Amino acid sequence: DAGVIQSPRHEVTEMGQEVTLRCKPISGHDYLFWYRQTMMRGLELLIYFNNNVPIDDSGMPEDRFSAKMPNASFSTLKIQPSEPRDSAVYFCASSYRFHEQFFGPGTRLTVL
Amino acid sequence: DQQVKQNSPSLSVQEGRISILNCDYTNSMFDYFLWYKKYPAEGPTFLISISSIKDKNEDGRFTVFLNKSAKHLSLHIVPSQPGDSAVYFCAASARAAGNKLTFGGGTRVLVKP
Image (cartoon, rainbow over all chains, first blue to last red):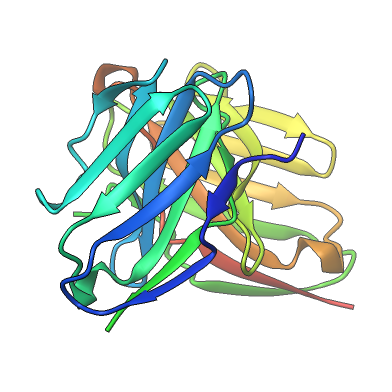
């Protein structure tokens, strides 16, 4: 199994641009999570899905952030418009048991 | 307000000795605790977990201890190996809050050969 796949691994964009981060969870996993890691706030949960349905998006910082999971093998996290304070590492994780989550390698986002 | 705290940002230990990582929490509703290990440029990897109904869980070289009255948990690595050098995160969840994970800030461990 390839594990959780995220793309791109690095993204550099300018303020105001739209950014789309992609995630392919491990096959058979029914939970998918999006996290953000920053120096100031550490690792924080943004949103999670169960069976492709968003369950809790209380961690999504603003309306500029949106996430979708159109099917069991794909999810996106979109930031529109992006701002410099969105610069962080974004992780996607999946699990078949809620707690033992398997993380992807992350996408390092830099917004100039 | 940080509900899960790892007060030691770093730890250095000699190979073969014990590494002890500490984690404190404030939310008494937390009922499940986990430790994750993270190498640079990789995502966190699940290491070991413990339910609030237990006070100890062991898996090979890794043991997690939970002291509910003190709202404290610790991870013991014995013996420490150079490959254990990484950042370790503790995390906690509460069934009443939908089992979402709240992470501590991490402790960077360096195991010297």
